[in-house]
Image (tube, rainbow, N blue to C red):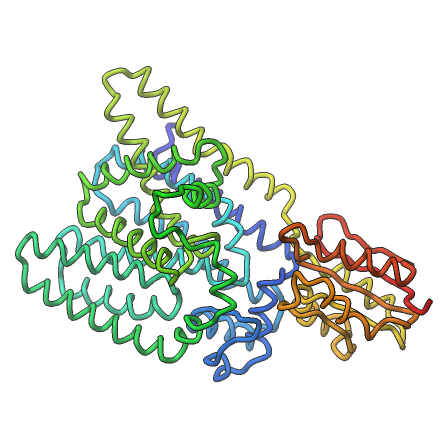
Length: 495
């Protein structure tokens, strides 16, 4: 029996769900950034989540409140903190399918969409962030939800109900996703262009009214939460490499890096950009307002980045992936249709480009399925430390290992252990690190814990401190758990 496109789509969605569930149930330890946010969630009450977060963390208030709800009901296990992102990741698969099906194009549309759905399902970044206790996969679900609600209006189904749903969704979106602002701006401007072109002044006024509601909501959020993030100098410095040049075309390295990160493409990443442009023009022919929404969303995001207001880099750019993936599917369909007069050429181009886009993400996600990445997997090392700890022992925890240590200490009976730590502002000054560890010099049993090792500009925190400790003391044990990126050393510094 011949499989229908609908059945194939369902199979792709299930496959994508299995990839995400596999990472979730691998139960890897929280890495440094997750642990920093997790400490804020588990150690604060609801009211305190509205204040600036510890460790210079930033997350939408809605996300924090949902996480706190799960934490209060189910406890502080990793699976609890990652449950909301998992739900968002699984929902995104279905929402992306619905988005594809909501666009015009007839039977040919479904065949064109299979590639896009496949790219979305196996995208390594989307798989990974579906099992991480951070908000970035929620950005994806929010972006897809907003576009799904806007498309009926783009397609001239401008009923009061559709406007009300979009207005409410836009208000909620800003509480759960920071980059939702760019989606709302893109959708709003696309609607204004649409109603100006059709001289539909009634719906134009409605659009301005909805926009005013969104702006009022944004002003409230800015007063409560966002102004603290915008004034955080550490975050601005930390993400400085994520701001694109004011003249983006002056140096396209940022574009290469963005495409490589988002689509896991190593070979000729600018070809992906060309295909996205082709896909946008194909979408423009079929769904002009939707194409404008995509373009304005990207324009506003890139402009904010060029003005150093929002870094379009790494995980902060995840919300743009569905737009790019959809346009890549459109591009392949457009090229196949354009070259349809020569079936051999049409089929060859389709297979080559589909393979080019799919093979690396598929291999990466399959490898991670077989052997999940236990990035900064600190739990085994914490167990060793707990089993070996004796009264009178001393402990040094590096600044980037401290959040995970603090989070997991209660699980291993180490919450009352006094320790010495470096500070983030110390790096990369080696002399400051020596001063931090100096209170432990002269002690016979000293444990030194590293995780998320600082390594920039030729300075490696672990190598530097280990070399120094080897000079002033004697190394007794070295605990290196394979694949964990966590390092525990035991020294006698009494000599």
